Amino acid sequence: MKFVMMEPLIQSEYSETRDFVSWNGFDVFLLFFLWLFLLGGGVGMVLHIFSEPTDSVDVVLPAKTTTNHPLSQLLEQGKESPIILFVAFFSGVFTAPMAEEFLFRLLFQGWLEKKSNNWRRSCKYSKHFPLRILLMPGFFSIFIVSILFALAHGGKRTEQPVDIQFYTMLGVGIINLFLFCFGIFYLTVIRGVGIQGFVFKTSRIFFDLLLAVRIFLVSAPFIFSLHWLLRNNFPDDVTDPVPLFLFSIILGVLYFRTGRLFPCIMLHAFLNGFSFTVLILSI
Image 1: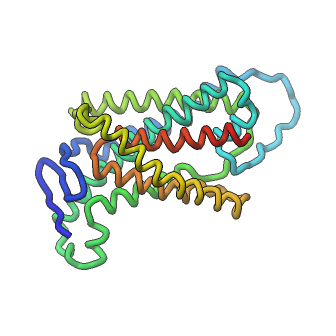
Image 2 (image 1 turned 90 degrees about the horizontal axis):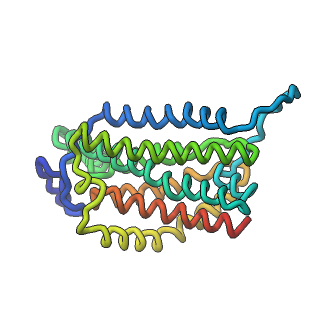
């Protein structure tokens, strides 16, 4: 297997030529920290502003834990409300793929690809089998990002009233949209990243859309079958990270091959949109 490296371009026999990654580890840390800070503080602020105050002095019992995703909880409690359906779609199908693909694929995986390329060129033992596997173009970055992506969707959830879930999802959706817009602004203005090169390419829009559709049709049956199998055999555990790890691998390969964010966002949105539709029909 022959890999061709170019400067300032990165290219392999399995990927399209793309511009050199100009952002660094500080940029990755800054934007991830901003996202987590806004999710922690911003959602709390939204809840404080919009939630109705209570004068009750009763003892507050700890919230019950559940394996259901917050989006599933929200739809279960209020799928008949058009505004709840809109907020659930806005947060889960529209803004979540934009923010998550920007952070995990474009920002983090793109930076790790640059770092692993540098490591491979400087590694004296790259011909030895173990390191050759680890330093194959794209392998290290896709694997690490997929682990973190899966872990970010794990952990126990708590049962909340429908109003709390509503404002939480609304806050998360607004934060994700803001982070995506700010992140694109930051990379284009501060780091000089060309949107045409990394986010989309005008001449490839239709091709990228069809590519995302084809990959979804091939991968979705396996991803959802695995999700259903794990949910039914381990009902007391949060099993989402397992199928999401595999889905992240698919997204990572897609980004590695195209170097563009648009097809990853569309594939992610198709999966979330299908999950959204199944949830509504099954409740």
